[in-house]
Image 1 (cartoon, rainbow over the protein chains, first blue to last red):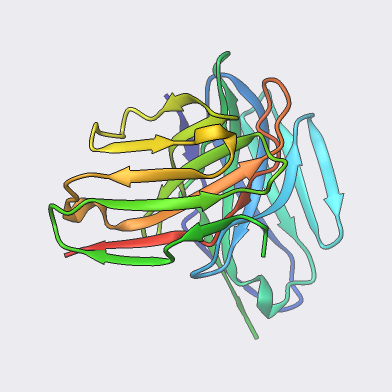
Image 2: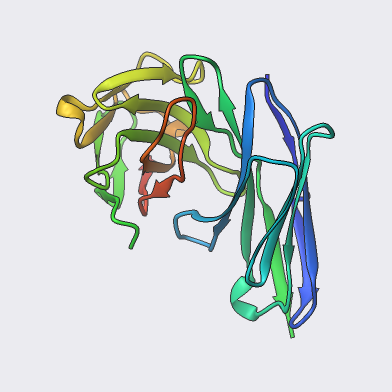
Length: 112
Length: 116
């Protein structure tokens, strides 16, 4: 089966840095996606890691350790608009099919 | 707007009725996924298509649920004899996938179902 674990809620101050962790135990692991979802809206793509290491994209960075089953999303210079849920999604390949399985999401609240 | 459209956006129905949702993916995308999301949870995989072929269906999906993607373009998700537990947001996503990869999923705005 698949097991994905990420914190339910986090709070951080505008301008600060926050790290959202995700651990996973999955079979057929290909890579890991992070999605952002504002309340009442569809998830939108943030990042994709297939190799170990850090991928940086503007204020957002994502890290992957395949051997540890661990990823994190790093958000710098937090803005109020970053208040949203952040979904960790391992990409699973079963040989005949490939899909994303999502964690429950981490709801981030950015405060003044 | 991601280019993936879903219809209807909201549906309220009585228990026992049938409902159908439609998804129009980005035109050149070969993969189409259906997910279900309830409040406070992440999207839960239901089923997906590679072109017109349905390649996987979640074990969570009872036989009251059926999905089609005729001609590999739009898709429909039908729920027969709805139950209150079916109340959720039904999300459609499409991607341009290579072998053994999903590609980046582009989600539609979802169809919210409320079963009374």
